[in-house]
Length: 62
Image (tube, rainbow, N blue to C red):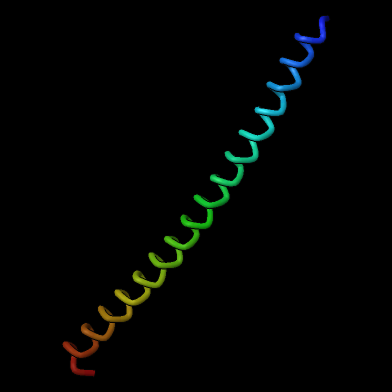
């Protein structure tokens, strides 16, 4: 292989590594956001269930 071809291959590999790192970082950011949303949804669901329980108990007069 010529030096030019090897240089192109190395350049392409370097670009691939950079793009892979950027993609990995973006996936980690998205994963953190999803985890945050899951926590918010669980808290909201717990609050709604508690509120509905309170309303039911109040209506039953216990």
